Image (cartoon, rainbow, N blue to C red):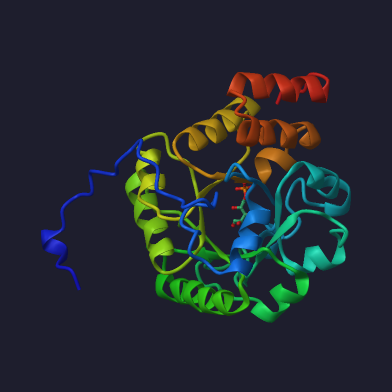
Amino acid sequence: MADLEGNLDAKDFGIGKVQENHGFPVKGASQLDFGMRHRLARIFGADGRTAMLAFDHGYFQGPTSGLERIDLNIVPLAEHVDALMATRGILRSVVPASSDNALVLRASGGPSILKELSNERIAMDMEDAVRIDAAGVAVQVFIGGEYETQSIQNLTTLVDAGLKAGIPVLGVTAVGKDMVRDSRYFGLATRIIAELGAQMVKTYYVEEGFADVTAGCPVPIIMAGGKKLPALDALTMAYKAIQSGAAGVDMGRNIFQRKDPLAMVQAVGSVVHAGLTPDQALQQYKDLSGGADD
Ligand code: R5P
């Protein structure tokens, strides 16, 4: 193993030089099998970007604000996003099977908010992901967390199963309470997840050095939303993440906890796919919502 004492800080990320995609719009995916590329092409548009709606929070939080009734609050938003990220329980019981969306299935779980969250295990069989027609499966990875190695093993086990089935894996950086959220941490976590085989990585935006995080990751980075912010801040974060090389967003609370989630989901989609600036997207949110001010 490389000697940590002689380890030099990474500094040359070749910012501005885009990784060659060899004709397939998803970063790092041109050499994957047909089925996997076909699924990735459902998650990502022809522009290589995705607007994904996350509403899997119930797998450890129960019915959080905005997700009390997924049939009423979330299903009407689905037509405005490329992909839905949810548990199999919600997909089977609530999401219409006639939905056109790519489905990214929550594949890990175990502890609730009452316990140590990093103690997750794989919570489904890849065969069931095939039955559901999932376009991808998602697993938390707790780099630096108490159960780091176990969560890495969850990832690598799913990657092996996904390669057999042709289903890509989304590795999600899960940040523990005491960890510093900076580009050095996210650069470490996202690169480990990609090196160990995930075809997509979801991580949080940071103001300083996010372009280094995306450039240092050989597969697409999808920005996680986080807690609810004022609409302009959330749209700015999405915009800056994409400008810094993210391939899209996977947002939850910043959409479904809004006064008008249907308006917000469209504004977020416009930032991702139509290149609207934060101010333009905020205007779209206000226009569509009849002047919502949150
Ligand atoms: C996190 O544990 C889950 O993957 C959530 O789906 C996601 O990260 C939360 O979305 P948001 O932070 O945008 O509400």
